[in-house]
Length: 67
Image 1: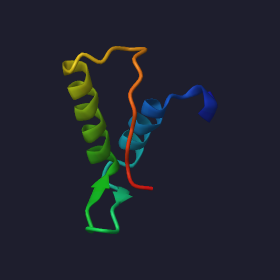
Image 2: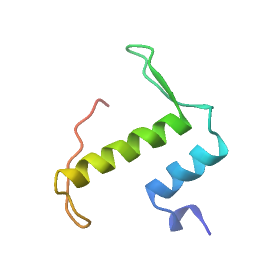
Image 3: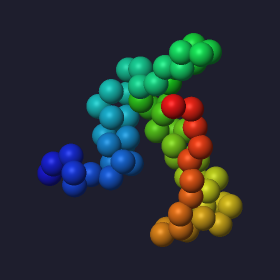
Image 4: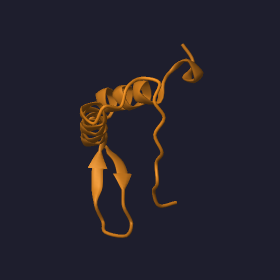
C-alpha cells in the first residue's frame, strides 16, 4: 500500500500508533505543542463535534486557519 492509497485520517492513525509521544505539532506563536497521540485525539473530537452538528459523509466544510 502506497501513501496515495491512504486517507489523511489513515496517516494520522498510523502516526499516532507509531510515534505516540513524539511531537507532532508546535505552535510558534504561543509555544503550544501536541504529540501525535494528542493530535489524533483532537481530530477525533473535531469529527465527533461535526457529526453532532449534523455534518454527514459527502458534506463539504471549509477550513479557515493561519498559514
